[in-house]
Image (tube, rainbow, N blue to C red; front, side):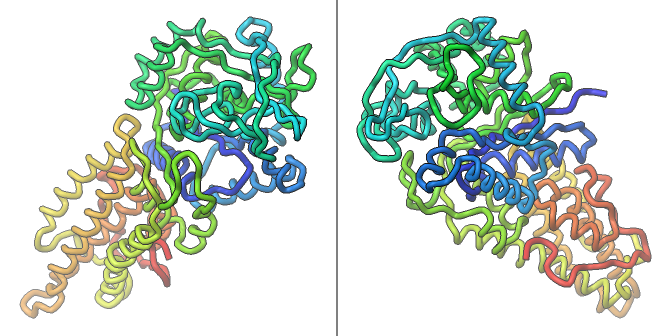
Length: 524
């Protein structure tokens, strides 16, 4: 049996709840791919984790006067609940502070890399806050990116995705007291990337990187690959297991990359991995994770699905607005079907996009006036004409042959949009909507068959044809809207899920008593 396709999504930092931008980025899209491949019979390993030791967790705790472990655990529980409610189903969510063996595995890897010379000590200027008496790293320090001039934190710029060493930030300031940071010499541990120049260039050339990520990687090579700090003098995080650095903690980017390896477990590396991440987090996936593998003599064919930022309408790039559309609130108001299809339609691919509440409301109207209206009329007709049972007839009706051909052509495009090589969930939503509109038009055109006095039963093939389309949608739409698709399958007494294939385009067995829900099938 082949090794599973490994799908990862960026571990979110547990300093706050999930907002709609998180769902529009890696999580729902990665779940769509995982569901499609599983339905096809492909073995899948879908993993993520929570970045409980991120510096932003410590900053949040200091501002709130709480312990960082309390902040991390509270938001970790909220995040995993939001994933569940939005239909994102992972095979494993790494919990850094709970998973047995995690701390030991990660510190053993760090210790081994240090012994092998992959990690080395360097003394560099590092920001320090004199009023707070604290070294500044990660979210503890804010400033201007030396590469793109965007506002950013220490360690990584989420606008251009290039790393910084903290000390090279322009106008660095303490995130807590806003005092100007003072540069001081500090001895830390680094991963020098320059020794991996040829290995990385060869790896990137064979990976098929998205254009913006390719431009980033080529620029890093052109400018000279940097040394990446993997330890900081800090109070929060995993202790560095190397003598001489007693008050240092392992860097969050290093931990995020190593977390993926822990999440995959002791299984043989897969034949293929697909990483979903925001562009601002791409460095950890496309640079640091491969280096950790190279250092262990491993290579992993990988594919990257990179999204840009999905922001509020009035949010300033790089600075935020303080106003968020929280995932929990939107799921509660609109349901997972509506929210999932909306964030897939609005997914920020190749450019920054903004959340508009009216577009989310429009997604709900599309489900109500398109999908649910057609299904309600279909179930009502079966109830009135066939006593609620699937008719004793083969699919037919005026234009059925044309509709069937169109559906099967659309199915080919749908499978392509779901596939890893041409993954495009926005197109998948558009194709599904067109299929529903075509089926609804077919139903309207043939509605008068029931009233023709010359030939009895001419309307029954029309009902069978629409039930066949409905049954197909229970499988074809499931990667996008699993909650409604399973509700539809239950109404038709069909097994939930199944491959996205032509085999699903058949009506329920004649005489099957249907069980339509009392409310809408998709959304609510």
